[in-house]
Image (cartoon, rainbow, N blue to C red; front, side, top):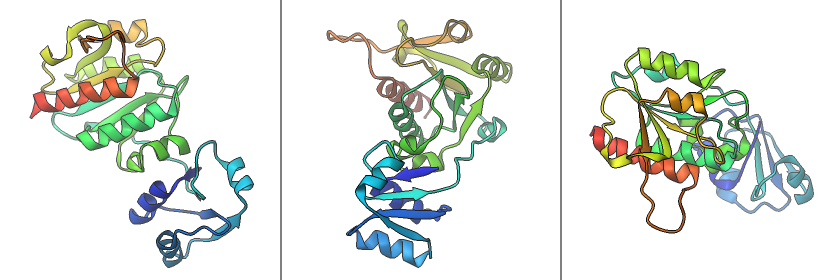
Length: 231
């Protein structure tokens, strides 16, 4: 898998992540980065910008890392604490949204993120770049069926809090104990079955002309309200 960008490269190198090879643009000037790479004896190949552009879809800043594919956690891995706080993503498709949500979850101390295998973005190079490397420190679980996982969590004592425009003010919900926050798809929101299996629906009051927020922004607002209520 390719990841790219100076910040991601620094994160990977500082965290001693496995790096198979590094591709840099001719006349790459970041001496500190190059010194880190050389100290770790990682193979480096210089390429013209046009060749780097072909390898990744985003702004690579002259450096691309070839790393092993992302290793997902298991559901048991995110249930090790007594009262976990989880985030469930119901078919998020934009890698930038997923990356931003991962970054927020890592900053807030969320115990794990659950995503579906199908009709959803997976952890790829763009996600890792947007998350600024935090995806490597976040437990992310990829599952076959979101609804089945929600039912399993409920049997284990979790409260499931969905997010939608028509619900209870998000500041009025009790997020203590075992809790999972569900964020729906960017365009359609939560699916009908997912919404039917939620215990609460959290809504963020809108006072302007816009009646909805970007998925990552809305998720971040609810996450930090939950953190405040649990402290």
